[in-house]
Length: 254
Length: 301
View 1 (cartoon, rainbow over the protein chains, first blue to last red):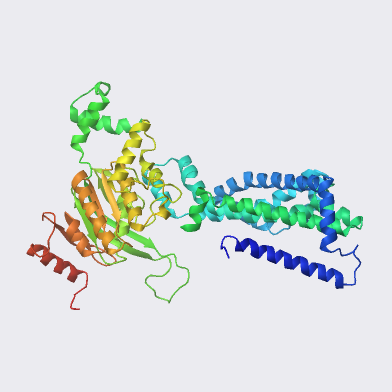
View 2 (cartoon, rainbow over the protein chains, first blue to last red; view 1 turned 60 degrees about the vertical axis):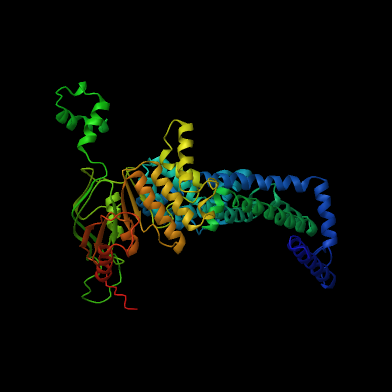
């Protein structure tokens, strides 16, 4: 067996077994096929949803929210993390507040976010932002404070200015850890968007699932779930590729 | 500008010119250069203490308990001449690296002074480049970018490229310019760090155990390269090592420190020609035995 192909073949095998178990469970359970549809029905409705564009429309809506919230979290979270990592007083000042807010589930923020941002894209983006912001700040702060002090000594040895230290030492040094944090955070963000969409919006994969359940189309519900899984896999893949670039790869080898 | 004022005012006294504005800056620098011995190091009454920050008390009257100061360097007085290769030996933990870091400006002393070229050490600068024991190269930069570090402000791109290439070839790393440190062996990393240190033409080169972690053959080869570089460039070089033979083979001056709190046990100028041969030079052989004994190692085995 060609060693290059066998991972692919093995995962294909795994998925086939899962499909088989699913089909068998459906056949031998007492539930009707409207309540718990088997893979054959689900796959057919999957193509239906793709054909009439609803799947695409809702996927794009969810992806847009995740991207917007995620970028906002990166834009505010990473610089704040660097700031806290470098300045001890700032950290002592802000860290307790961050640690207090962090365990509050983004979903608990739903009532407040609906109050502040209404219904639609904005509350969802806010929730994504919250769910990504705290992990990013914390990971970045830890990454900055664990930079080997030798690099700062090298910097002072070669007369680095303050901005040079940030641009040429701090930022490149934390990229590997930040990329790992981004990978984990994207997963969380994707989880949260689906939950957020079940409550506050009129589009998106979460909404699709809720709406389909209300219409008693369980096959559409499962299609939504499959779409969520596929896109989640795809997002993780992108992040993994990011970790293989030159600026991040040295971190996993050193 | 602070730079010009520190040079112009004392120089105007030496050059006998009353009108400071008449003194051309170039002449000023040349005049001052002569009175200042670049690369001359004086260490006076150096003391360094660390405060114990351990929180758990070991026992009631622990002399090294929390809050107590641990003396590491005790009244060090040394003087190194310009262009010398000084090898500093001592048992581990005696504070050799601490002293080196104080000289380089990374740490401050508790009391005492360090004067380089007649001026107090205020902090790190690119006049004295430190070569670290390990991981001194920036791992997110290639060999080329690391070596270029000191020259990054050079305006002439062509000249900069030539210089960097020249020094990379000097340490025999041509072909590896675009490699990252993790792709290089320990010896190659050391060489790259050497190139980075020398390319800026520092007054002083400071090396903290430069051969640690290297296999024997690489150690020998790089030791040879360091000595050759010293012969070629003639910079004041301070090397901290725990290897007695290294110190005796490389150094123009050898300093042996005692255990903590450390003082200077031995300071001797070595006037032997290179290549150093222990068999031929009896004095060297005796010195070697003496140093071994001083460091508490007798080799009856």
